[in-house]
Length: 472
Image (tube, rainbow, N blue to C red; front, side, top):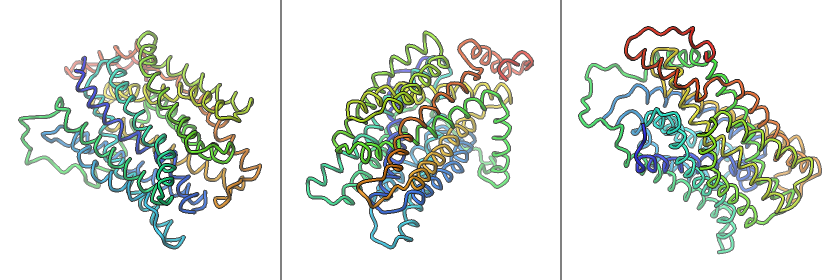
């Protein structure tokens, strides 16, 4: 089913929030906690990891609730409305510098990180799942995610490009380093909250105007239901399409988190780039992603999402590994490498959600019931766990390599591993992702068969699952 332009645009705007918040944390929070707040790298990595693990617990609950609640605003919209204002406040507080003892700093930023990911979990899974309900058309889902990806890139501009140059600008205006980072948190938080409100309030397609609350409906969030929810997740994970899509997502996001979190360290300590050049490189990545979006959508339409995704992973993986061998020692070389890295990065963020949407129908065919929120929650779970693993791995690497958060010049071992984490490790990860996704069984040929089977189940007709052995 084709969507109207305003629906795709409104849905896309919501993508600004998740990427602005995600990239700000992924790119700068470890750097902020170590170089501005003065927390040791391994401890800072643990703080980020704990926050991500908490989101990994909350995300599935949000997905489960959004699958089972009934409101006049539909299933997903209420979660965006609920998260908008808290997300703005907590993002601001997370980047507020507090003058207190080292131990209290660890507690404060640990708490703020957990609250941040809690707010993120409230809206992220329902927002992602909402896209699968707006259309079931195989290619239209890619188009819808293309709109979201464009605003993802605008969000990336706020979360990854803007902070360095904005901090430098404010310091030049006489503000302190701490005040400058606080302003960054406020700006990203308010913009993200506004994007969620615009998205939620302007899409009416899934509203239920004549909704009447069922007075006999049982409570959704009970201990028994939560236990059943996690049992349901384990059942879903037994499906072959789920295992391959979640596995590839986990590996990619660990690699991407290491790359993104290490990037500022590499630019600052290995190359000594000023804030303006750092922002220029991240801006290049953002612009490259926007330019590549229609090209990747077109390639997916002519070939297949899976083929395009694999090609992007292989290309960018080879680029990163080659960059480590050749050496990336200048601003120009960094621009070239990061611009080429954007190919694989764009393929992931544009195509992976669309592929996850297709898995929702596969799961419905296998189980006989629709659990879209649960399926999307598992993908969100992989993002949380991989982000936790990525920042923790990088924090340990930096500390073991002798990184000194108080020093302006780092030792040879620290610089070597900062370089490895910027190119070699992520490159290897992307090649592994390409191999894993090659085993993924859903494509433009198998998906119509899945939809046909789902329609049979919905009509109450028998479905022979042996006909789908190649998929399950």
